[in-house]
Length: 198
Image 1 (cartoon, rainbow, N blue to C red):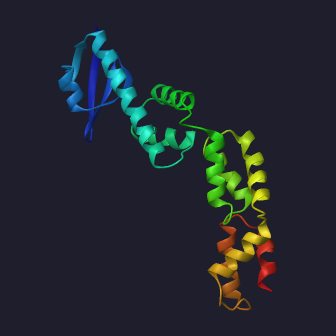
Image 2 (cartoon, rainbow, N blue to C red):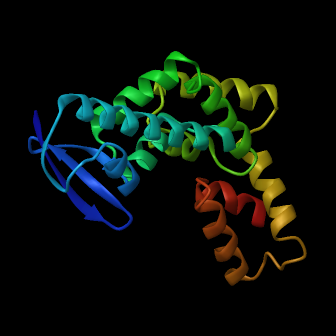
Image 3 (cartoon, rainbow, N blue to C red):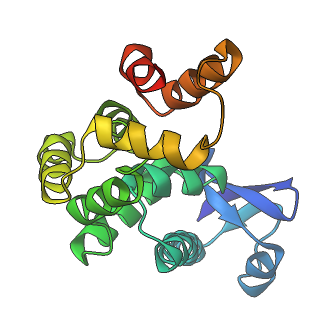
């Protein structure tokens, strides 16, 4: 037998078995397995609850990936928000890599392709470093895609200014500051941008 405690949070319970947090469960789970809010339950019920918690976490991760490519960091963040344990999250991540649902190379390529015409290499790299991906792949993929698409900082700056700020008076200091601030947020050095405003 094991001792369980259920602590209500919003529309679900935080389940503790022998004082160890195992994850979130719903009232329907408690009813199905005849789980009291506190008391002894069979080990078989604990196993069933752990299995349900894992399956829900895995389904949540799969739903995220069904909509768009996501990184390991994205999945971990979303599952933590849903109160899954590190152990459950780790098991889900292992499963996603095993079945190739998570693929760092594929994710990095997708991320770079969607950002390379509007952000600097350094900002793309910085943003990817926060996504918990294999950083050894990042520089290789950035170099490859920027080269194949003939994209460089000057091209991005020039085309962004032409598209976003066409018709504006570049001799006006306020306009210059606004453009430089805009491009700086996209990772470009003010000196690089200023050359296109003179």
